[in-house]
Length: 354
Image (cartoon, rainbow, N blue to C red):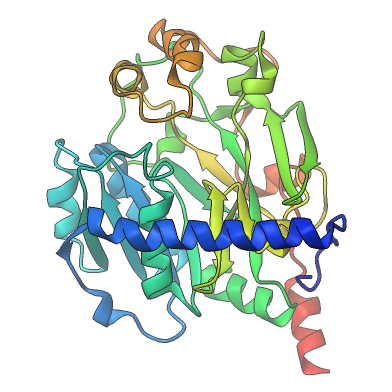
């Protein structure tokens, strides 16, 4: 069991054995997927012991990249390992020019690679072992208690001192107060200046067997696009930050992981245990055009036909704002609302001195 986390429900020896086999299969898939990747820029020789690494796969995210790097560099990421899935909007050229980026490119199927997980797991196996690794999408911005004064080296140091090897977060959808696709957005600006509203709830959650992973659903996307089929609404919990081992593997995005003890790191909204929030900036103005493209590409869901109504809902340019929406004001607000746990920085330091 991961120290300082809640224990997971016990499982049988047979279930443990099947999960061990599953993890080996996932690692083998990742190893084979290396043939999909062509290295464009290799700066991994710059990675030093103790460096904090960020892993992401993307396609056509040029408008997000300036702030993405601004945010995570300020947070303390030392090196970015990026897989570009056949971008044609200038993302590749931009990434090649970043001094702290190692870049791979592929034209292979995003869906067939477990939505990019095989590619990133291979890179984590090769470069992430022994490092704190952050897995985030280009439209996700991690925030956590005191992140403005305690960057990631402080957080990972605290996690080390308190016996934790993973850190969980709620994915929180941000949206504008006018119709989707009608806003002005400067790609160099903070997207939360345009997307500055969110749903405070309701969120529901349960632990799933046998992985013991949390399953959180609810929020704005469910309200807007899955009201008739809430069981199909997006999963909102992630474990984006892990002290990586080459024997680890994410199972479904970074919603769940193996070994299963990693899933004990996050208990969901309303729990005081340390956690963060991934600000989800999907609903920038370009979301309408992108939804049309992704509906045609059919790369983002196991059964794309079941989610045509989701894309159609976005293409209709709805207004997601309601009188019950909350205006985003920062991490303190999210903590007060119970969407983010607490970190007792000083108590960990005292415990370390004993």
